[in-house]
Length: 276
Image 1 (cartoon, rainbow, N blue to C red):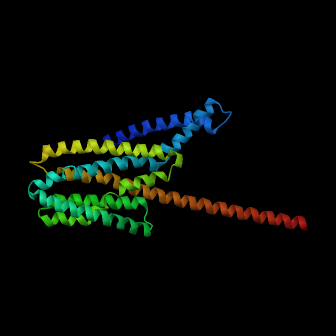
Image 2 (cartoon, rainbow, N blue to C red):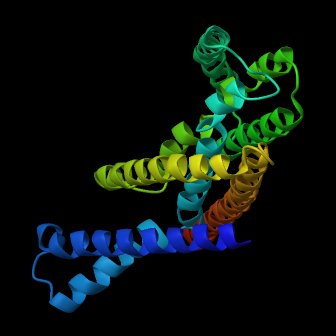
């Protein structure tokens, strides 16, 4: 619970800082797009634009927390994986680790692309793809807790190629809700979050593993599971929200088309009366 609160506080802080930066950008560049306007108009317009970009959209507000928890879970899983293989019960040599990493890299390069191709052909929503990725991460972490034999580790290679979809899809999910001239801001934000979470996550989870390696070496995988549940739930929530929004848009379009047809019928009736 404390971890969730800390992550939410960090997300709120990042969003507030980014929101102020974007607000200042719109305020400074207001005169380039609007002529003969007052400073009050500039402030109102800048507030509306920044609100639409960062705070108004539920999906955009949720994505920073999704990305943060995913990066931390990824760091928790892989930052200590080398030491996990070197210790009991595996006690792998450098040659065995090299073989495993080689096979993992080849499978990731092939099947991660094939998997995305299949999801694209099936028109699967981005949130569902990310949910599948987090589910794979949870299953792999559970499997690592109970793994005892070498073949147990190689069996996880069936799911490892599908773990990093969240990182690549976050960009495409955000760009659906912003304009092209705002892309460089979003790219800066994502790069900043990625760098901070990777650096802090690796150091923090290495420290956790050092404290628990002798008594509870699989604690780091339990933390990974806990962190992965957060983006999994949020992605499902985003999918449901998008479906509801799409349904509302379709209903509004149907109502508008019905209204247009009704107006056309009235106009035709009036024309007939005029002719008579």
